[in-house]
Image (cartoon, rainbow, N blue to C red; front, side):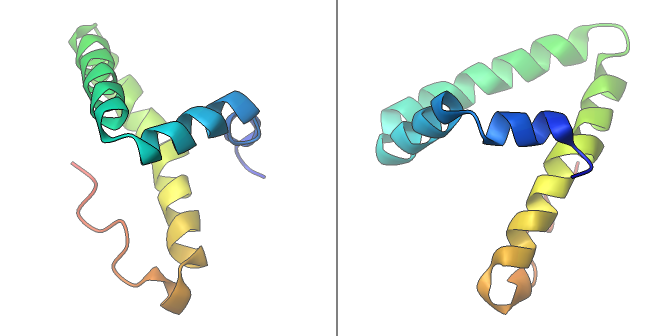
Length: 85
């Protein structure tokens, strides 16, 4: 509700398909993680990049982890802890 861009991404069938393929294929998952790490490192090296990544975490990643934790059985106690840097 508070992140319409995130809702759009999560409703994209291609994103969901790629996510499911990566979950089934460890080599694909590693490749996606390497690509993401490289992209984040490139953004961080730009002027203001670290602050942009921090805002992205606060606006997107953290709310997603909160929702995932709240939908886990038992309330997801401890889920997402230690993920912030």
